[in-house]
Image 1 (cartoon, rainbow, N blue to C red):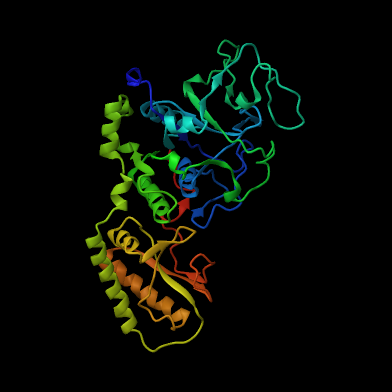
Image 2 (tube, rainbow, N blue to C red; image 1 turned 90 degrees about the horizontal axis):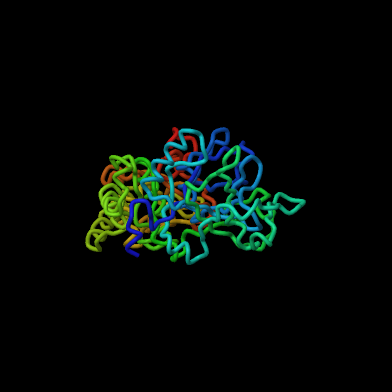
Amino acid sequence: MKNNNRYDLSNFLIHFFREIDPEDTDTPVLPENWGFHSLEILEAPFTPFFMLRNAVRHGQVWATWAIRGGKRTIYGHDPAVCFTEMPIAAFLEAGVERARRGEAMSAFGLVFAKSGLHQIGARPVIYGLDGSPRMANTNGPARIIDRTQLAPAEQYRYVTFEPGAKRPIDWSHEREWRWPLRTGRGLDAFDLPPAYDDICGLELDTPSMGPLGAIVRTRDQADRLLYDILMKIDRGDITPDHYSFVLPTDEVSQPADLRDPASLNRAIDQAAVTVSKYAEISSKRAKRLAGRFSSLVKHIEGDTEPFEFGQTGGCWLWVMDNRTSLIRALIKTGRAFVNKDGKYLIHLDGFDQDRSLRQRQNMTLRLADGVKKEFRVSGTYFSVADNTCPDELPFFCGVHDDDPLVYNHSDLPPDV
């Protein structure tokens, strides 16, 4: 496909995220609970970066009807996930400028291989038809094109195109693709407030979706998204190569530098956060670091007196930064793990489990101080009363309720 090696073409498709205002009537139905790791302020719009992190953490991009002005812009019976075929350089320029104008776009996105999405059913949209589409009368919100003009299964692809009208309608600059969600659940499948896990869409964690990329603005944002990706890897949701890069575009001198394929590859190599670099650590180094950690646990156990009886339950050291060498080592040696809520917990087998839960909590706080001093890793305790399952509701956690890596904040400064 030599003719495709041009600055105005791309082998990628990008799904971009936009600002979401919970009070806006055009906003899709939002989940009642985003999970423990999200801190959403309902009075303020959710930023594109907040939406991107939630998509990665939950492994899903929602399928919607793309409501604009109270009307569906996706026709037919299938909601869809939308993408742009714009090259990355053009996407960055358009995303920043259109977000500044208040349009429903940003320069935050997930990058997919075009060939992979095509294999699962994504297709380019159809800009316009012969004549004006005739909408069938319906009792609900659906917008249906007469089947003699466009088959029902293809109607999700239709986009109104009237460049010669008195008020021109031309969205062809988006070079849009769509993937339909074929649920068979009817038109009202998204009309009730759902739990997050009940929202349907494109599953990001399936092996066929990789390798994926992500586009953010700053190195700090790249670090936060890297935390999410590593968490998914360590929990076993995805393989280490499922996300190949996170590109902080503020470290690219000019979007024009990304126009030809060779320049784009160089920019990714130079500026991107390579996920696999953090996921790997040698067995020798992992064993050495795990040994030093075990020595700290042993020292605190031997230095704690008297022995207290009381409430039983599980207690673990909860650590915050999963990119550090210590955490990579403890993951590799099986000492650390990720619970269902994405918390990084470390087994404390060196503590006598017959001690009371409160005493082990206090011991774990001392251990956290030692880990902070020796390894520069922040942590606290996480405990479950009368139960040793780390996925149960915690009896109590230490205070780390604003850590920017662990928690996804919806009210950070504008980051378009």
